[in-house]
Length: 484
Image (cartoon, rainbow, N blue to C red; front, side):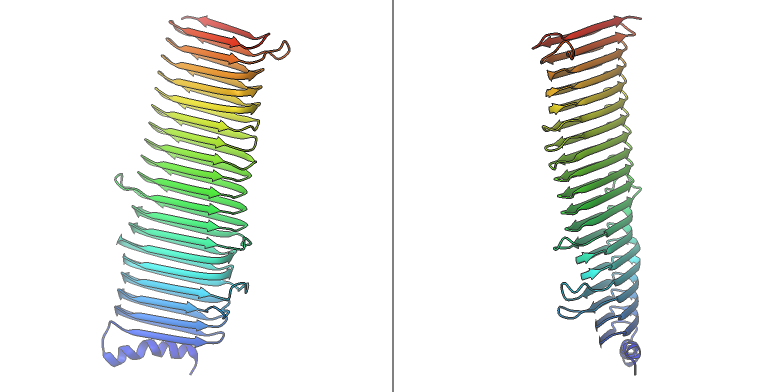
């Protein structure tokens, strides 16, 4: 009798003997290569256990009903179970699937393939563990009309492994952990897709040469909150993507010690929040796009000696963007575009590096912005505000060849530029009534390279303009004011 027939009989005999349609138990044990185990159960409270040890083994478990359990184990420490395949299909409610695939550490095992599908009224739980794998694939699909689907996937000592989790329903939870303690794992990918409300996704990737993480969440209820968290540490080339549609979404991306970092966050809806940490990398790139009301962004790029780039786009009302680019390296770039009312932007670029730049655009009334660039040379600020009651403060401290150019269009707006250092330039162009402009320059000016300050105010009445230059010779300034 072959191994596949034995497995089928193990599932069938208990049901025939008891005459019951539920609470069956099936156990299969196979030792060797090229085995197949197929278990089918219908009813409630069924239990299927499959243990296979060897190469090229295949397992398939099908269960329908309520509260069924499937447990599959391929391999154990000291035994290589290479190129194994597991398929678990559970329909109904409140099912549990556990799959454990492992080989001896350092064996460089061949691919593992796991596919878990759980459908019905939800309440499902899937746990997949893959150890010491090359090219392993874990796929979990959970769908239901109510709550509480949960999927957890652990891939340890990975190289070229992939995880895909798809969940639909409410209060879903997905947790992916990929780890290679040798730091040699390449092209590890993790993708979580959730549709519904109040879902939570976490992806952690540690110590690999190449890692990509992606979370996509969609919801429709204004009273719910979806949460996305991505952690990448010690990855040479790290890419993280978070896409959220609906209201009240939260996204956290934390990347530490990655050399090349690419981060993208897209949120549409109201009340969204995004936080990004890029620390100790050589080339850091962040892009955040938010469409909706009351959006909030915080980007912290700190440490490392390479380029840092942050781009934030917010389309809606009451937006807030905070970008910190601190410590180490030259060529820091922050670009912020905000449309709506009562927008707020705060940019800090602190370090001894050169070539720091800020490009800010705000449209709407009562916009507010603070920009600080400390130390270094060849820094620039280009800011445009359109609307009434806007405020902008620029501080460029202890640097040379600094430039700040500000354009404000509207009423009752205010700009203050403060530069210290040598050979700097500040330009303010305001159109509208009752606007104020202040420029302060403290540093060395030379005949060939003077400090320069220019203020132009047109299109209204009751202007105020003040320029103060101290600390050197050959400074140059002018003020132009023209009414209606």
